[in-house]
Image (cartoon, rainbow, N blue to C red; front, side, top):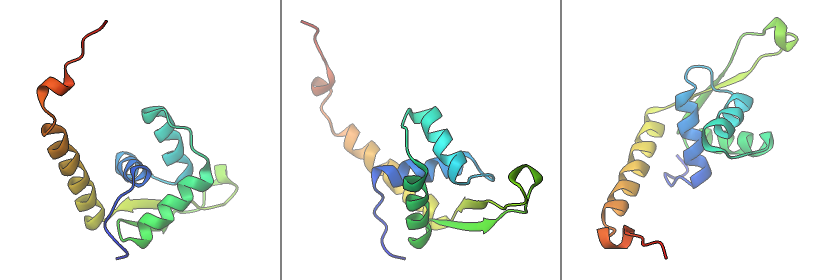
Length: 112
């Protein structure tokens, strides 16, 4: 495994691969991120992150069966691994711990 640090975009892609289980492929992940997070990404950025997450051991991939609607082409389907699930849990735990350390007074805003 190359490392366990998750960047913000890596975390977002990993979450959406989980959400789309068992049909997560590049375009579907890109579309779901735009729909759920309002982030517009290009497909090459998504593919780059998916490849990097697979190299880190957080995802695994397999080729789907060819379909007529895709002109006989197959899709590369991505699935979370146990290491990917752990990485997400650790990222969520860290964010929660840090958020809980912010004094309540720092989160009180007065409109002028």
